[in-house]
Amino acid sequence: MSHLLSIDSLSRDDIDHLMRVAAKMEPVAQRRKVTRVLEGAVLGNLFFEASTRTRVSFHTAFSRLGGSVCDTTGFTFSSMAKGESLYDTSRVMAGYCDAIVMRHPDQGSVAEFASATHVPVINAGDGPGEHPSQALLDFYTIEKEFARQGKALKGAHVLMTGDLKYGRTVHSLIKLLSLYAPMRITLVAPPGLEMPQHLIDRVSKQGLDVEVCANLNNDFSDVDVVYTTRIQKERFTAEMSEGFNLSRDYTVHKAFLDQHCNQSTIVMHPLPRDSRPDANDLDVDLNGDPRLAIFRQTDNGIPVRMAIFATLLKVEDQIEKDLRDVKW
Ligand code: CP
Image 1 (cartoon, rainbow, N blue to C red):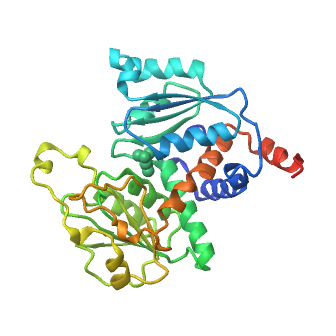
Image 2: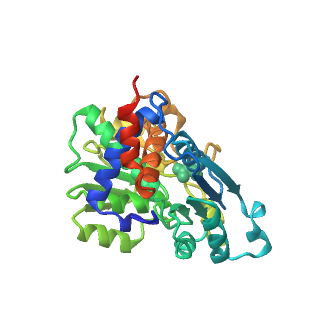
Image 3: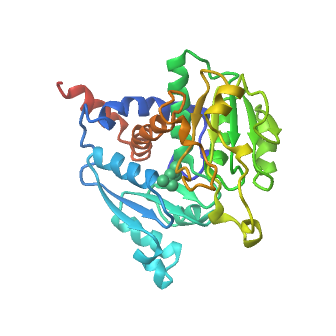
């Protein structure tokens, strides 16, 4: 692959390969082993929208491979504030950087940026479009959690809930999971925030068994993964914002998990979760419950993003050699 813009560019073999490379990166991510394979390389980490995890974990992943990082956060710290186009910015950054990670509020903008450069570009979220590296780390987490529980991926049941319209992580994840069909997917979204029908049609054709439920008041006792997302009010139109309050009927909390799911159901969330009292996002009453996988999920961001860099920058063999040669 030359860029990572969408799950569309990845085959099942590509994803399996990235998962294997990520597993090899674990000791480097945890600083038990060292490689300086990207020494001298520079990452342009361009975030035109807020981020904590994606920005910092890409930065950390590149740094722990020996590279250095140049961060730009927000439009005001870039010459885009003076009207510079994506095309010109891309051409300029390509002269300075060996890889570029970019988040932007407009769907399609990262692909437009990438089309102007030969330097590998990673889509770190383009508006309500996609967030492919998040889907890869989500899948890595599911595989790891299933391995720990002795569960098979084939035929697994994933419940996706929350803002499925604007949540770019679920758009990427459902496409990714369709490569691993047969699987069951249940979708629960508040009215107006449903998964786009074209995505449901597409993944159904690819073999996912997709069911839409109106709310969480159902029997989900055979669900293996509850994947919940924040309501992305920042993407609402003015009419949608007017009086919108998420009913607690759509909130994942301990009583929901105890009464509707089972003891091995894991709970995932791409984060951030909205902690404001009226947000009704994933409840903190699950903090400390081993079924809550959200911080194991965030930790997995480092090895998976290292694997993405290793693959895009074609340094996997050198890393293998470094890790083999070093005596511990
Ligand atoms: N999951 C995710 O994209 O988080 P950030 O917005 O903090 O990067």
